[in-house]
Amino acid sequence: MTTQHTKGPWHYALTVVDNGDEYLAIIGTPNGNEDNLPHRGAFIGKITGKRERREANARLISAAPDLLYQLQSVLDRLEVTIERLPDTQENAEWEHDTVAIFDEARAAIAKAKGE
Image 1 (cartoon, one colour):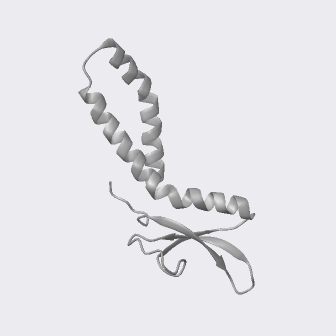
Image 2 (cartoon, rainbow, N blue to C red; image 1 turned 180 degrees about the horizontal axis):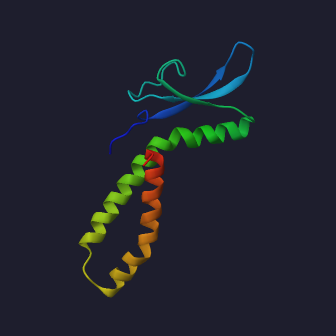
Image 3 (cartoon, helix red, strand yellow; image 1 turned 60 degrees about the vertical axis):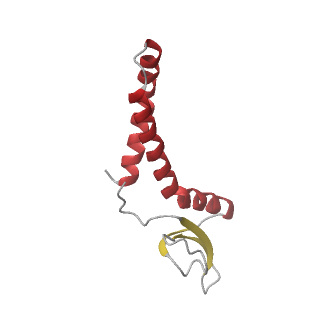
């Protein structure tokens, strides 16, 4: 899978600016080096707002590269598995039922990749 975004893993770190304001910085650390965050790595963005919501949003955003990769991997694996299933009525019904789920997964991947 080719990526245009900063490769993961992404992390978040509390950052305090000179005037005392706090925000959570989303940092991409493709080399895996988490030492001295947020000063090391690629700055992705900052999350402001109430502390609880800020941290929940930062967790979700920092998980995005992993979620994208894993969803693509699961989808690829399931598509290969379905192709190998014997032709039975039960398998045909199961495959039909999963088409909408696969389409939704492909749409989420396309959205994340800007396609």
